[in-house]
Image (tube, rainbow, N blue to C red; front, top):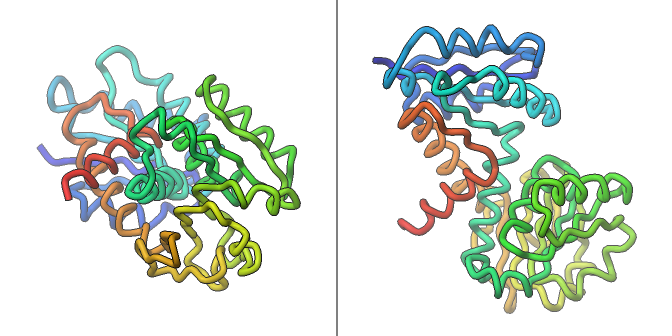
Amino acid sequence: MKKILLQLDVDPQPCPFDAIVAVDAGAEVLLRHADVKPATVTPLVHGAMFTRGGADLAATAIFLGGSNVPAVEAVAEQVKKTFFGPVRVSVLVDPAGANTTAAAAVVAAARHLPLADPTAASTLQAVVLGGTGPVGQRAGRLLAGKGVRVTLVSRSADRAAACCAAIEARQPAAAVTPAANDELPALLGSADLIIAAGAAGVQLLSDEQFGKASSCKVCIDLNAVPPAGVAGIEPTDKARTIGGLTVYGALGVGGTKMKIHRAAIARLFTANDHWLDAEDLLTIGEELDASV
């Protein structure tokens, strides 16, 4: 029974990156569909559900991707509604690579901070720059799920507040605070962790600002396009120390992101009822990191 992956992408052209990773991770047949919408996804899902039965359903899976994150999430909701009882297949949700990237960033931070201990994690303060973007929102959500106090920083205070409200709706106990960019100087001195998740090629933290992060223990810059999102961090940095500070660049985190992505694809084919979202991908990343 061949392993078939249905790649459903909301963009006009399915992402080749996702396709290549899928093949490398063990998908034997890749069926790619573009411009997928909630109104058009149900027949595609039916095709995956009804062509095989019983244990053979585990050999079919769905990947949901694309650059428009809200559009992917809307498609995901419709996919959930289409399944019924045991008649379903496993699904990986990773719009714009946001879930796997955010999971990898949190895994990297956990190598140096006590995120596995809820009591200790609750004493930590994280500042997420570009916190309303796809990766920033998910990094904030994952950190809040660990008990960390998180501030989402954005150009728009209103958008930051909306993103914090969305996290609190999923996690009522989450300690998340919105902030606008002009509030950043007041936040840096108390930050234990800084994650820069802004747009490519945009510097979010200057040398002068970075120097004010006196309590920071870990700083992760997820921007691989010059200039760096955080001044002084190179894309290839992986646990490089600057004084008492540990830094990671985009490529330094990227290796872990790729491992999580490939492992998640492989896991899809172990059962027909996996639904792998950000939290599940973080668990996969933690398992991979513990096995090294």
